[in-house]
Image 1 (spheres, rainbow, N blue to C red):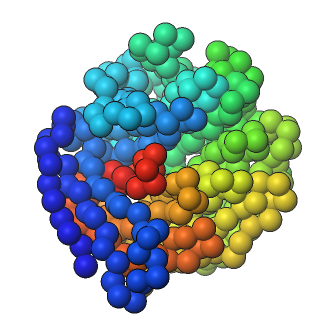
Image 2: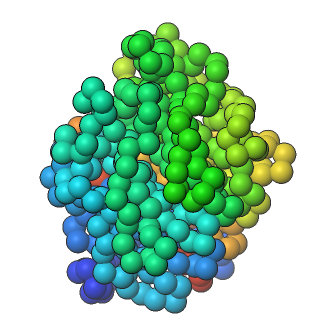
Length: 393
């Protein structure tokens, strides 16, 4: 069963759900973490959350008209219970987009806790030379008081549809990645993953180059996710579109700052249309966790940082109900929370659901649920220093 209480925070009502273990899970009573629900500040949508090495919680979110809105950033220092005043990320008003859920802003935390943000440009953004959709990038300035003017990182590989992504490491490397057709060709089967690399914390980017030479294609309106682990290894997760029907999940990894990527197929799925899916990563001790969706179900796998070996896909328990948009967080005990949405569709909100797993990938307790995920939104999660989790929706 669950106990529910409500308290008033700086941005309005914040509901808190405290897990009470059922008898069938009594052996886990001492380790079952508390899960708290939090609304996105300022009635925003599409939250993205990351916790840096100092325990600071960083969040970005979208606010405004779905076709041309703005991106905002807030932070909460370790030990605090409230977020800072919001900073606007985009310098051109209305230059971000939320339509389709997966085209909104993405965030990474890099060297010295610097925040890096990338997003698909809206109709109000400065276009490419032939009015192509730009992939915009901005970073927090040295003083941490404002975001620098946005800039388009695409030089030639236009054709942006599904969302781009960004990753950053502690050495000052920043990677902005996206999928698009090779220049002068069209079709999902001809799309590939591109990456623009900066070695100076985003001050400048080299022109993009193709990350993986295998002709997998890329599902046009699906997102992709980039991630840098604690050792500086780079991971890309995306959905293929081979022969336009093989919508398989692919993992790309690089151990040399993106000079070369190795690729492997994680999960097969045959589908004739684009499912508008997204992926996510999180660090969990000496492992990286990757999450994705396949055929209305959400999965994750554990990847060992040293060997690169991965576990078999682990599914969320229960019967799928249009499960989408999975995200993960891991606490100091290496317990993991997998969070996803249910019942969402085009111009339709839904439910948030979550399941906690132990360090072996076994479920702890029951699935939690709450109504009220807004249209075009996503969900997020982060761990607290005491081992509890916060689900943001």
